[in-house]
Amino acid sequence: MRHLGHYAATWSLPDYAGFGFGEGSIGCNTPGRLASVGTDNRNPGTARAFFVFAADRLDHDRHDQRTQKALIAEAFAGIGWDVPRLLATLDDADDLYFDSISRADVDTWSRGRVALLGDAACGATIGGMGTGTAIVAAYVLAGELAAHRGDHAAAFARYESLLRAYAQGCQKSGDRTGPFLAPGSAFTLRMRNWMLGRTFVLNWMLEEGRKVTNIELPDYRAHRKSAPVTLRGPGPGSH
Image (cartoon, rainbow, N blue to C red; front, top):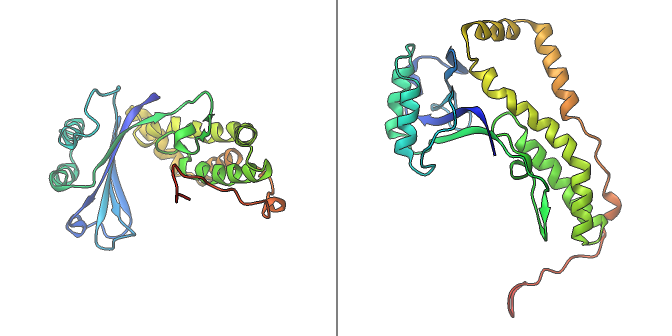
């Protein structure tokens, strides 16, 4: 695991209307900090806070939410806007997600009869296309197992050879997520905002993203009628 210099936190708010922002999202940046809040499309009338801050690797108990909440409050102490009101909702939040923006670099994606995909193989927390690569990888992994008629060793090797370069290309975008969301200086903040306000820059960024995330996938339809694989359980009656 490689720490990429930032942490991210998100949690739901009990009374979004009280912030008076209406639909959509809004945020506040200071160097190395982003505090934002936006509507939760899954639950109308509620919202989610999303905070990002720059920090070296923190030594804390990943299962201790009280400590995590204290770390977030400390990182955003003294920042104005509606940050104090947003932080106040942390006390009652029971769905806090808090983690470093990190990257997983694994030498090989399989060992024995176990294969990794998505974030487990080449994750980058936020912005690394973990969900997208997981879906693509599941398709290729299943297809290769069918094509090799259950020879998992050959299927795993082929699966990794087809996808590793693509997945690592997607993964690299996660390296830039923290600095993009929470630029480290007032100058880089202004530059980021200038770029976001220029249509030609946004179009260029989208096109570069398409280049990274495009991949030509094998067609496994010829292997749909492969013989079914029998799964044997640990004892009599298992299936």
